Image (tube, rainbow, N blue to C red; front, side, top):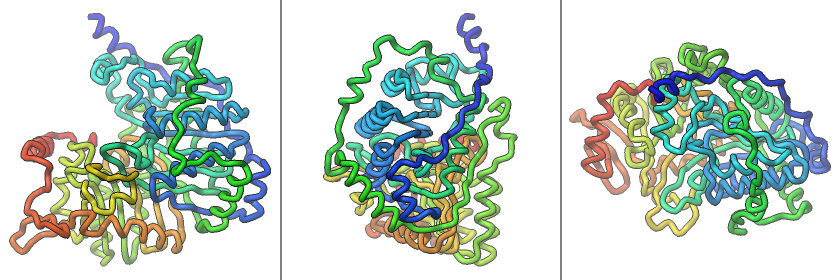
Length: 492
């Protein structure tokens, strides 16, 4: 009875005074960069080491504000480094606002416990679980009465510094998104941007920050720990200086000038799902802004579409848009995870049901290999037995438009979760992204799917031709087949 009573207790929305991002900082650094250029510029963060380097450099450059929004933050080598640099910024007087989704906050990690104690750091959790435990299973049971509300998650990944520059894309904060994990790493992609678009990105952050389902950590957990160990965070793990060296202000300014001077111009459009209005349980019936934008983007194609998505489970609207494109004679090239590289087997089980139809409609399909021979591009060496998986989410249209964001092309991203991204109109950036992902489509790095004359779907690499899904084991094949017969596609 006690468990049933606990399950029946629901979290109510919270009304707080609204907060907004400050005006763009006019520090010496940003004024100098504005003298270099004042248009919208874009710098591609293609590999993890570069992405981490510029993320930490941006944090170290902050003088007034940092807005930090993410789905997952693991306190590992990368997570500790980001934590330490954010704390250093707060020590300098920078106002830091952190907004996290609650999916992976089992109990409260060290970042939550430490950072929330700093007077210049505010920490909120979007659409949180009311009853908080260290066990994923017990947390689900104790919050069972609110399953439909909690099934709606915030998948956005954004960082804004001084309202002058922003990073947006697919990376969470953990070793595997930056090439540091010891056994497996993700191929991902982001943009570092500057110019007028940044104020729209920060306004999008404010929209979530001020949402009635964004709760201060103290409200959920209780008062700040009496003796937060911030000093241990300040003296925390230092990254290999070959990846990120501590820099003087002079060197940092020179690096910013060089990067911004060579960055690519492009007209940006922000794609943004609005946070939940009313009960998040009703999200699935609400307008889906980003899905509509993506479908419209596909419908705009005349010649070619290249889409890259970690999880590919087309919704009916998405699949119809692909069919319309192919009927217009548009070439459609797709890269997604293979069964072995997919970190969610159930997602592959749902995707496999669409393979034949996509191929029959003319799609050129590829699946990332865990043993991709060029995987050193995305992870620290030595490679040994490290595996590669895909986490990037992007679309190229007619070699003149680029979408990079947090949204996979599946029902969860397009219908249930919140997502964000940027559509950039730029032939130069489109060519750069095309060149960057070209390597991923090569047969030494991905399986090429095709239908043989016999009618069988075949997986082809530079070494093998298989007439079956290239699973790791017979048991994985059985599990994949089993999940494919469950009515779970809408949850993927």
